[in-house]
Every structure is written in C-alpha cells, then in structure tokens.
Length: 101
Image 1 (cartoon, rainbow, N blue to C red):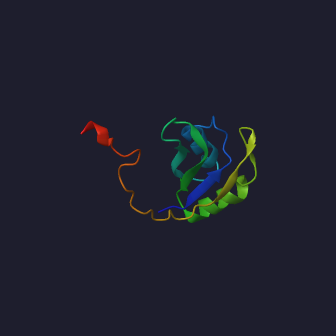
Image 2 (cartoon, helix red, strand yellow):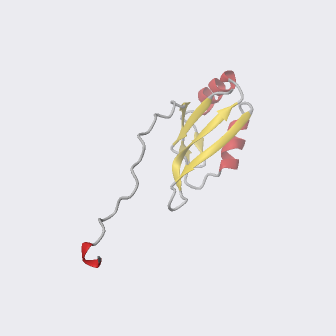
Image 3 (tube, helix red, strand yellow):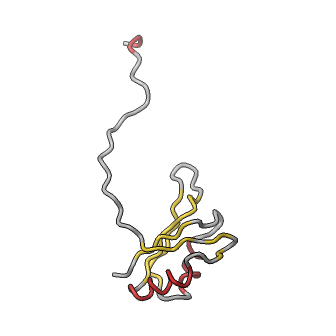
C-alpha cells in the first residue's frame, strides 16, 4: 500500500483529474480525491493523494510542498489517520408539536 498525502490550500477550481496529473510527475498515483461540501458540492480547498510507494510520496512532498499550483501555494504533507468519530444520534430539529395530538 502506498503513502497517503494531504494536499491543502487548493484552488476551488482544481479537479481530481488535474490533481492526479500534477502529482503523477513525481511517481505513480493510486488515487486523487478532493473533499467537497456535502450540501453544495463545492470544493473545501483540500484533498488527498495516494502515491504508489513511500519513496514516491516523499519525493512528491519535497518537490511540491509550498509550490504554486493553479495560482495558490499548496501544502503537501503526509496524511494523518482519520480519527474515529462518535456515533451520531438521529433526529435533531425541533420537538414534535403537542397541540396536534
């Protein structure tokens, strides 16, 4: 399994395909994903790239961190593991109206 990289400060217009092409210059890219808002579908300005090997990941970090990519200086670092989330309680919103019963 390759190393997963965090890519921050992305331009909101960057596509996953363009992100993959940019990182492919430094090794084999297993996947490239831009994180989007679940309601609007708009980019949140960061994403993740999984490289084919740890060596390729290190090469991509040293070559791309702090460099200009589509008008913004991107941040590239090793991704931290996702922290486990507490189970979500259902519902929310306002309580049911009692005058309707």
